[in-house]
Image 1 (cartoon, one colour):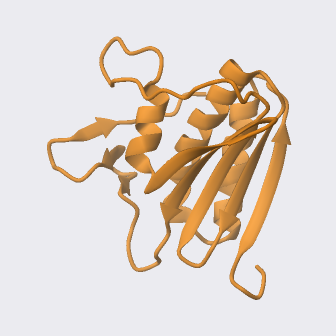
Image 2 (image 1 turned 45 degrees about the vertical axis):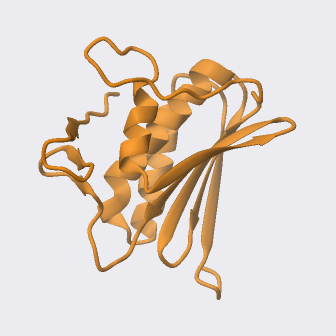
Length: 158
């Protein structure tokens, strides 16, 4: 960690089916090294969704960058497809496309897209205040989105 309390790690991946697993492992290892284990599950799930989208839709080399500041972690997934728009799909029994970004939206404290001339970067911010636990409940396997009736069961496959 630098003197200003910031750290950064980066992983470059090819657009292959193994990329999401490599990215999940990278994020889990990084958060463990930074002693931020309570945020591993939401961070790994978010990263998996973003990398899967990049592999399927961009089809270019991609980079996963994780940055730590004193009170937040920022995860960025960058690819070389500037022309692709991101759409958040409605969660439902038949939603095959776009559901991943619904998960990202519900687990992240903030997220967005930065377009560049040669691609884009989808970023997510997670508040990692050591005085609180994330809105993710690993024991229940749910993301608490604020109301007791608005919960979504999340699973990571593969």
